[in-house]
Length: 317
Image (cartoon, rainbow, N blue to C red; front, side, top):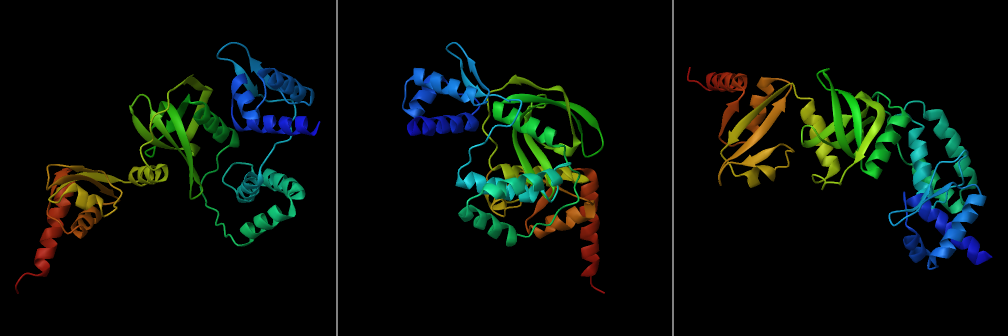
């Protein structure tokens, strides 16, 4: 009896951790026959867990949504992560989640073993959280996006860009990133054929929001660095391209986080930007290399004006 109960708990944990399992996969994990798996699934159903089965070669088992939330199985690390996450959520960031998070955290702390309660208490006591003033996001939007990314399903949504222009997007979602109180989605824009970063508070999901499944692509390097770069460049009021008389490897080694492409062995192209053209001109000078302004013409005018001002500062009197 104890062996069967332990196996049921392990089966439930597997079903909660993965969207779908085949019968042979579960049998292999549990070291039992597929017939025993079927029997154990029936036992879970009698306990109120909605385990759905799909027949056939491509079929399998998955845990569906029921009329009531069944007990969840969490290991020590998962329990601590959930408790800390609820504590952070109580500080805002997701619309209407503050009070709900406090109630859920109170319930979780009641059943935490003392060893885990001390770990959670230490983390909360010695961590300072400074809430941001960013727009909050409805939790159902976040969960829809997260589920679509997990299941490799396309997302359909309307998006309002930085300049206030609205557009319809068809994208392959990959990661949600939380930065300074704001949520961002890193996704592959199908129509534009490139990676894009979207502010989730500017996303309006279509009905239905999800579309066909897609084959996952290789991520463009470090997700956090990519999103950080996308956020910073999206805020630029002015952009330009300069030709630097220095190897691309040398400029990349500076860790500027900008687009740099080689133009031969000793030169490279760099995409620059900022809030004003005069500031961009000054910043380029800090690179301490010879350069040529390729675009826009207004940046070339700003660089020329700065050069003339510096020239007057050292002219003979």
